Length: 319
Image (cartoon, rainbow, N blue to C red; front, side, top):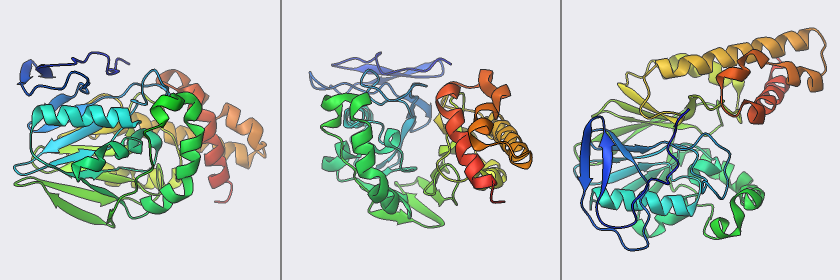
């Protein structure tokens, strides 16, 4: 998989964002020390950056998930802030190079560090942080652990500016945010990838921001419910989107075709774990053998498949 990693940026002056064959000149000057996240305009007023299919490290500054922003007639909404305050600042610089409109909302799609560690960078923007109604509880429970556990991989310099900043506007069910002649539909989902997954649909462009309810190329990771995720796939597919920005993977991606590899993996994983349970195979052995036929289809399979299988075994053995 070929994904940009932020190194192709310009430090000063104007820079260019590619959208198909067209190039949009971003003429607003940046300060001598500003670095601009190399976003791509994937639809009118919709910009996205594709993170690297890697683990979070100091070398990639935690820039492993996809982050986006949408520009309306009056304001801007940001979807996820990235894996470090440094990335958050680069994202703000990209927004400021595109528009002077206020950043009204920062939407967190769920609790994981690669999506929320950039929140602290938005403190001076005045943005309202928006999240699933379960997100504050999840961050209160996991936040200190995240701050400690990522010190080694990200390093002291990057971690110094990172803070856990929870949302103040919470979503239950569906809610709309108006950016001025442009409405975003936010939807809170039942436990799947996590128990605090939130998606964003831009009605004007037909762009669906899935958060980590959709992974492409990068192996899906489970921190919620395998059964719940599988049960909601049909509802996800029913979103009438023109294109998708997955949590990880190419931007934009075809929708709903983007979900097909993930659904196959889940079905194979569940089948293998259920058979192991039925055959009385111990968990330690079952998780090593589950879904091995999928190994060649995913990045980071070695890093995450056994964790997924362990979570699946713990859930499915009580069916």
